[in-house]
Image 1 (cartoon, rainbow, N blue to C red):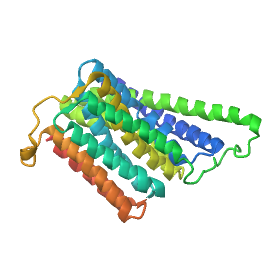
Image 2: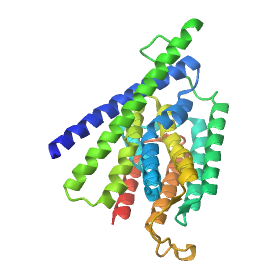
Image 3: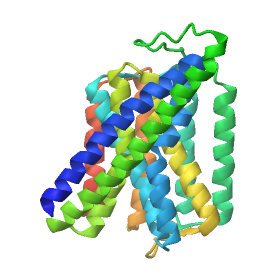
Image 4: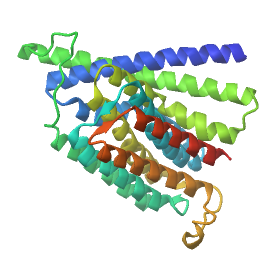
Length: 331
């Protein structure tokens, strides 16, 4: 059984990497044909595609009554996106952050993380709070497309589609959209196989389900972002890479926790520490929320101090911060 799980894990990895490559190819093709900067595609289409595993896991968890899984998945995935995925991207190749992204979407991500933490601090996400998150998501989409004329439209290096005749634009757009959809399917399938097999392998080695849930499930549902971001960085698509990470975090909070909480209502199991005493004895949920906000703040400060550049040293610092957070969460 262990050998079978390892083979399934490898299959998932192939699907994940292939799906990321196809999604990036399709996304950049659509951006070139429509004249949309890749950062906008990363913030919307690619971010939504790579957040699909979080959405699927959250919906299934809510329907089965495990509403705490939804909040844990959102928090864990956002921490993995910033502390693990962005770190690996920066270690692979220093990342240059688009000016508008550092001045608008990154602060908005930090603000959304803080608001979400405030809403869930008592262990509950009410339907009213969820409604505000959904409204924030709609505002984010409107704002992003209203400001779509920004950045640089990067041509596809190996395709001659920039000067397509008007009658061929629909065909080129359909090809790009089809590639993006195929890539999303590959990411979803690869993420599913990797999470499923990794959990079985970990349990087979005697790792507790709690540790598996806090680490492998959260990391597993963030693997599409990891694959997409690294592939984008290797293809010199920094705008798309960072847009994917920031957009995915916003999607997780606004478009995953928001709609799921609006329909089912979300609640964390276990008592929560009252605010006056939280500094001395915070609950596990409050530690996770605080970690998510502090890591978002750290990324924002790094971008500001680095003048829009996240180099390898800062990437290593993010990775160390992520490891420390995992130690705190699992001990």
